[in-house]
Length: 339
Ligand code: DAH
Image (cartoon, rainbow, N blue to C red; front, top):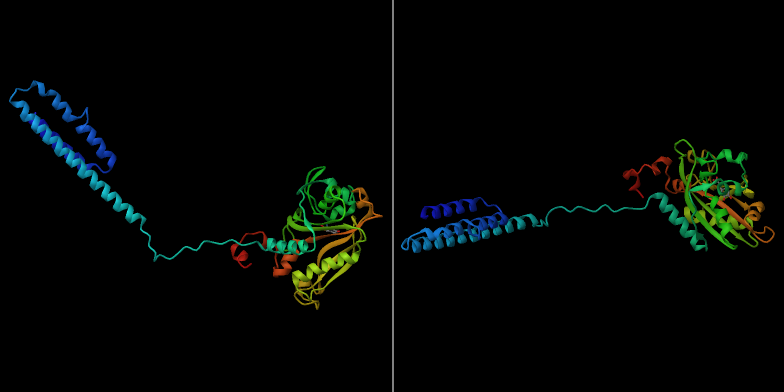
């Protein structure tokens, strides 16, 4: 038994050396000192011993137990210490390391321009409203005085979802939705995405943005339209900016006009930017057609109004002198970081 006991002690110390964490140490404590442990097993056999041997073995067993207990607590303490040391090393903060600057986002040039435009119209008492991009043929065309097979439809290559549902080609659809839901006076702008089945090039994209405007009240004239647009353009491009209205045709306005901006590059003299015209076309506008008003339940004898549709890409490209529209959609940080 003596031998067994000293073997247990040697074994316990050996295994403790190899124990690498607190859990392993605890397992060894149970294995050697626990109720079903090895020392207990030996003590249980003490009854077989003679009266002289019993106290000797008993003493030895107690000493071995005490030695193992001590070895266990030493091992546990040293494991704890090295664990702490490891943590301290791991968590050390080197304040001399170079910092990592967080990347700060910024507004896309289209959103910057849109926010500017919204600010200007809010200042004039306009509301901002939105309409759906998936639109019925009715709101996108029919109610705007463009029945099926109307030639004006050919200028807007349409993505059809089915015969009566389209991706809207123009934000003008929101004019109708607004007039159906709201009594005059109406003063709204409606920015949003529009879609046309166009091939991508420097000035075309199948997805682009428009800002629709609509004003309906008593006594609204073309002078109000011109004054409003002039104010917008002066705010956007500077006080010396001039616009001109050219006669045009849109089925939902009468009279209709295309509005040109004096070339911001050459000031009207003619340059490659304006194709030597001195002017750059930026939007369509006009006085809302009496038929459109009447179909929306507004009496054209009592009310009149103007509408316009601005290309957000056009005015953004003008504002920042961006020559190729594709740059606006490519998400190239080298480009976007300039704004
Ligand atoms: N919807 C036209 C287009 O996409 C732009 C436009 C022209 C809007 C005249 C209007 C308007 O509100 O009165 O080309």
